[in-house]
Length: 436
Ligand SMILES: Cc1cc2nc3c(=O)[nH]c(=O)nc-3n(C[C@H](O)[C@H](O)[C@H](O)COP(=O)(O)OP(=O)(O)OC[C@H]3O[C@@H](n4cnc5c(N)ncnc54)[C@H](O)[C@@H]3O)c2cc1C
Image (cartoon, rainbow, N blue to C red):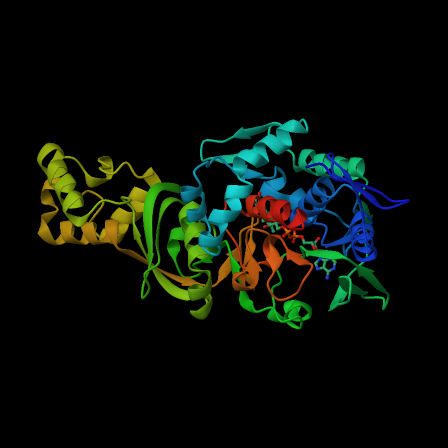
């Protein structure tokens, strides 16, 4: 049913008939027609919320309030300046597995706006995305500026207002909506608010939202690399082993994938995944723990022993340096042999049971001490934020305060590296902007 409001006499045209509105309904319609919508935060989620708000509510006056003088600043630096917009993963039950926080609720949200919708949304606006071998999706231009230009153009075309250097300090409920309290002391009443202020490194950063009754999960960093100041393996910096399996001693944390040795420790997808799924536990350990690496990936002890037995039989007279049974990077194989502590000229048939046992142990339970973490420059996010129990995920509406919505990293939602965090921002922003 199409509804049109004629302001002068307030006749509601339904397509079938015209209804004269009573005063209350008239007021209500006029409010909705001129509805002021404030989106707090000029990042990915804020822009997408604002665009969605104006698209779904064309008569609303939508304004983005950004505390700094820069818009979309994380989009600009994201993905090493290329912006990993989303991930090539179209099955929702698989997609949600990439979110250590938010897995279950996101099932519903991705049913409303998924990576397929993200790809179409950008395509429809002339931005083509390409997929890399690991599933990450970037603009074909390989430049985050393309994404920024697209979002800025859309905001401009829709007539969305932007106010920079406008930090919001307080939010208060009012009769018709909410009152924004700006840092400079000014206030403004609006009918709807979307909070898209991103992650905060400290719980106090959420105080203004906690004061409205929202619960928060304590923020801790996610997506970081491991520091190993006392480990000589760092001399192999640049070496990639793929796949490896990594465990954290004293926990159930485990991950698989490529591992990159860096000059400060270890990085790469296997480590970043662990840092994300273990964000809270590793924080509780104060980032001091031990890792166990299985350099053969998922091979079991029996499979490793059988492979080594085959090598002894077939290449018995060859030096262990010259036969690399698990096809590890050459420098890594040399390094591991050194740890087994057999001489340079040792040949396979002379290894003996003791040395083979030691080799098996090093191949599958190689122990390293981690002391501290380093920010992964390509992407980092905060684990924690506004508790999802206080949000209706199908609308992103606050369960605590009427007319208030949330989107993006301010929520207790975060994913592993690979475009999942922006996807969460587009999805929650789109839903919040519907203002349902
Ligand atoms: C270096 C780096 C690279 C990344 N690369 C990728 C990537 O390639 N792919 C990916 O999926 N994810 C990436 N991420 C993660 C991704 O950038 C974030 O998850 C995403 O930007 C979150 O969007 P957001 O809009 O919720 O928050 P933000 O981008 O943090 O935006 C929040 C905005 O709100 C403003 N704000 C905060 N408080 C107030 C206030 N009180 N009043 C007014 N304004 C306020 C802030 O200034 C900010 O501009 C990366 C992150 C980093 C740090």
